Image (cartoon, rainbow, N blue to C red; front, side, top):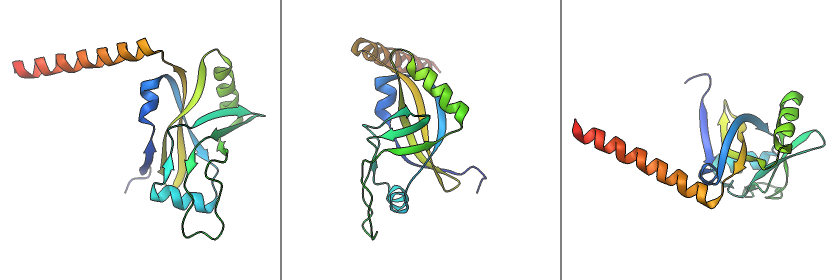
Length: 152
């Protein structure tokens, strides 16, 4: 067992397709007990989630964590959840998202040393033609690798 054991709960695969990722940052996430239990069971939907900087804090919105069956009192599944970052990191994210077209998108939720973390990306939305161009580039790279492999 390593000191930085990472167990992924979910990944936002659509984000890398829909957005051009400029930079990423790891943030803690403030959760209630029943939310942590649901996360450990993998009952989370990250697809529509996004983050915003409000009043010097970063909140993750539209993250759906299903209620835990065994809990006495359950949580609201889509409540805004505060992300835990240093003030200088929050100021940096705020400055980056104020630029035209940039947004904060969660890429993954995971447990690192049994603490829930979110991988947050500063991203710019891709246009439809950009997506097609990116797919064409990756297909060309794959076919070149296949051709090189067949020669050997």
